[in-house]
Amino acid sequence: MNIDIVDIQKKYEKNFNDYEKFANFLKERLNYLFLINNFTPAKFETRVKSIKSFIKKVEKKYPKYKDPFHDITDIIGLRIITYYNTEIDDVIKILKDNFEIDYENSSDKENLLDYDKMGYISVHYVCKFCDNNNSFPYKFEVQIRSLLQHVWASIDHKLRYKTYIEIPKQIKRKLFRLSALLEVADSEFTSIKEEIEMLEKFYENKFDNKKYNLRIDISSINYYLKYNNDRIKNIAKNFNIERFKSFESAKLDNLERKLLHFLLKTNRHFIYDLDDFLNIIESNQSLIADLLDNEIIKKLSIMINSSCSFLIAFIILIDLEIDRVKKILNLTETQLLKILKLRETLNSLKCRDIVIKK
Image 1 (cartoon, helix red, strand yellow):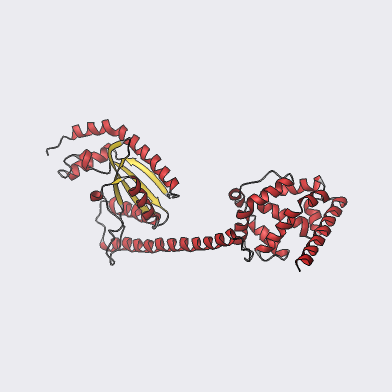
Image 2 (cartoon, rainbow, N blue to C red):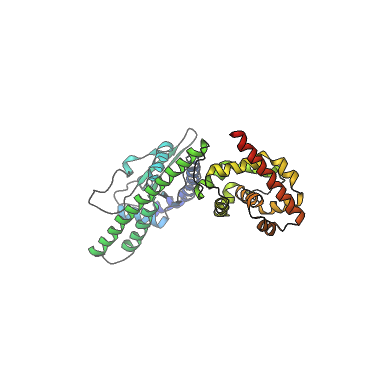
């Protein structure tokens, strides 16, 4: 064998730190590219081929690799796992837009199995990073899979390649049947994602244009709160309520069902009913503050830390049975009379508005 393994090993050991530095650089670079392209991988990892693995590949493929440091393209490897199979195309576009592609050593998604075959579809891109300031001499290989493809490939590798036995055909057939099922599941997950996105666009269009003729449900409430979060936060500030979570953080409290319960209980069945209620509070902030004392506001503020809890608290204050309000807020008789006075005043204003509109 005309190959100096010792010399190759020494050279690889000498280069190893540079390989690791480049792998770390690539990880940072790709994370940045993912961020600006609004892509979130299910998993992203880098690795440098171990010395043992590199030497083993050189020996196994000899004399194919005359210059192993140039010819072996996966010394530095990246694995990008996507949630959906359609996102593989998004990753490929990011690679093509930002790196030089060695197409001769890459396998594209278009090289699919025949229609009557089953198995793992491999997507590998061999790339090189170049810009105006730097040109790194190392190529690297990017492996791209969907999460379900990754599950199948990992288990298949563990079962078939980590054993000394020859796997019988009927067992191989079982493995490939599973790959077909996972391929169907991959497509179904993508289809479900697209249906959800269509629903999101429907709600976004409605709320962008303030078309509030939507039935009250969890989805419509969530979008109303999202689109009116800053508005409600500003109203709350005028009542000296400063403790206010961000919309995304408050959503974790799962108060939307409680708000839904109170809205339906108070005969509000459409989003425009909810918006009318908020308009009443917004238009009469000074009146509400004047008719209630600071102690009542303080008791309300304990209940409020988000736009959702704000609406719940004010529905309780303005619309809930007075005995329940007294119990929930632990009110004195004097405070109870103030709330009754507030309700009477707001009702008269509502009635007057109805007459004016007519």
